[in-house]
Image (cartoon, rainbow, N blue to C red):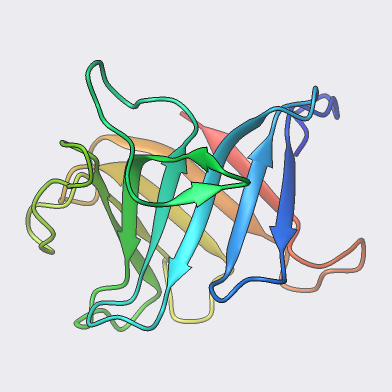
Length: 155
């Protein structure tokens, strides 16, 4: 991952020999910062973002580990059923292994594509779109440089 000037600031490492999809985000000194774990074999498929240090003071680790290091709940992402365009709802951790209320109307953040085929997501804070925009995640429709190259613009 690079900043606007092309300077690398973190690495995303995919873990393929795993029962679940997972990737680890490391800083440029190869220290783990976050772990993204996709749980698809559950009643509510979602992606969970864990940190290697507590999200808030006093937080206890979850039962998940990465290379025997404890993981702390940071956020949960899920796709709402009632969306025709690509959308993600994001709940932030509010306990040791718990998250804010998971509903379409109370989500902490929403990421939504402007149309069904658009390769970008607009992220806003809160459940209402059009206010509190915080970033734009964009991807070229055709990827010539490599697969899964994204531009993230933070407001």
